[in-house]
Image 1 (cartoon, helix red, strand yellow):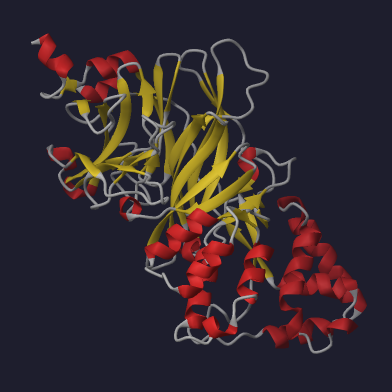
Image 2: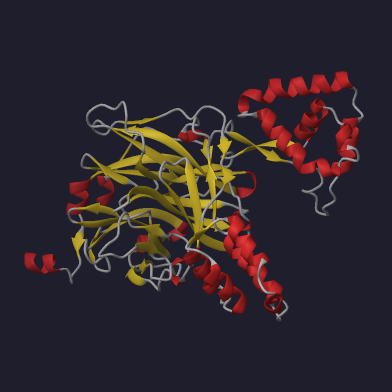
Length: 498
């Protein structure tokens, strides 16, 4: 049986409710009939005497100071967000302002509900290792109250042999802070084309923008548009669409002294307000050197959208939307390099078939070429990829997921031609990894699912989510996996063997 190829490791990552971030809390906003009670609350805090204010503030820092980085700064920030509600904000003492910030804050446990769907890439720091070891960064989908997903990380060391050591995930978490970004004109044009917004206003703006531009340049151009254009029918709607499309791209960064496992990529735009799901990281290499890239699903509570991350150091991330028919579904995963000069990605554009899509000159992902459709009993509902293809001497190794009876998820494998990835040259007959009794119970039962692994020292290292409740790890000898695959009838090597 192919399932015997995979060896489960003893190491398991489980959700840790102590991993919390600080969020703004406005009383009344969670009610069925939204009626903010902010003004009355600030008035009550303002009427506390100095002694009581000091006592409450000291108790707050004693209880929460060690759980959050720069608690003082975060409370100041939350006060600034609500101070317009204060009748006489200038009369509040510095201590009272901090206390107001505390009353308008709450902790959120980012992985209190589930921890799942990992991907694995080589870590940017490879210092202090022994022979046969490699340090890896593991991305995690962490799910908290309200099924709100964010992207977290862990650090591990693989080897020597099948040894796996995951670093402790201690210390206060830090949410990335928005930072300046130089937008790309071609991505703005692709976004406008996606919503069929092509008129005199958008054409004028695109013609005037440089290839790279900042927010100030963008707003200055909008402000300088001729009145006879703005007064046309739909003029203000075009301005709104320009701003909305431009705002889909942003950058976020973390302090240099934070460890990778302390960093949280948290929803920052309306499109991802209900979650950032299933990041698939890959270390992409071209003539400019290596860069970390990832795709993830942005969810606003009603619609999904595919977003791309790029980072040179896993500390500063640039976020851009992905456009075109090839990325209008979940499961997009980028190749680790160009193939024949083409930027390629796996996708599942029809919801049930693994496809291959190519980026065209207008930064739109084209209609996909089907690679693998549901065919075996364990994958008859749908199939999809489990992360970016892994380059081997024998071809592009694609880990797949299939959904079978009782919505049971299992992991399989395909092999694509190295030069022409449109061709499936081999497939694993049956599942590589299926839920066992230890995996089947959890937040979403009967699921094993991965967003990407890697090969080290002849072993495929496969991190996987178990029933969306915890993260496990498995290893598979690469040569044995390739040897167990069945060649496709149209593959020349299979014909030669006959």
